[in-house]
Amino acid sequence: MTKYGLQLALALPALMACDRFTIEADLRWGRDRRSLRYALRGSAPGQFPDGKEAPEAARPVDQLPDEVTALLQDLAALPGPWLPAPSHAILDLPGVGQCVPDLEFVHQVTGQTVYLEVLGFWSRDAVWKRIELARKGLAAVVFAVSKHLRVSEAALDDGLPAALYVYARVMNAQAILRRVQAVAGGTG
Image (cartoon, rainbow, N blue to C red; front, side, top):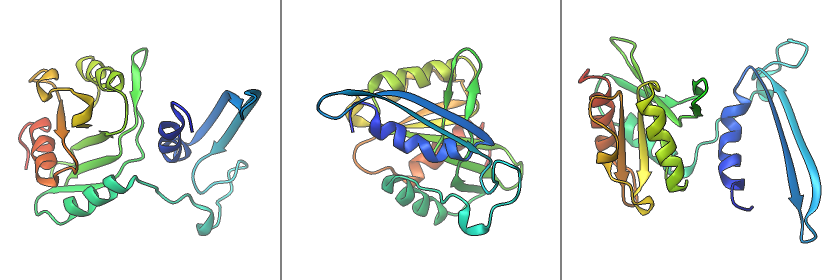
């Protein structure tokens, strides 16, 4: 994989969860850098293109990165009103950009949702794009950012329904939950 291959591969399960999707890419393949066109089209999970229900075995299986799976297990062990789960949402600000969160937290009493996107292996530029999305009104979201990207939690303004969580090696479930509560306005 080259520059963006891993990031695209990680985004694929979220794209496949969409009602309909089309991916097209022009590639340079192999040592001789042959020009190839890649196209993938799909319909709603569990449905065939004609709208008929697919058998249970044909439904896509959620695939989370190992560190997100470990975090989800740690979060599920914590008491409180926030229920964490893998997210299938694509947060879109028309004309600004999109965000594909890894997890979502739903408050059992209020129904409020806060999202978590893990940017551990992304570029520093991607973090700044997420900060810009938050400043322009993206849904309530926490961005978990690896320390190696050299971004301060203070880079995201207070008062926004968003927060940065900078972690060294392993994400701390309690620290993330505190940020989820702060983003939600202290609920729970």
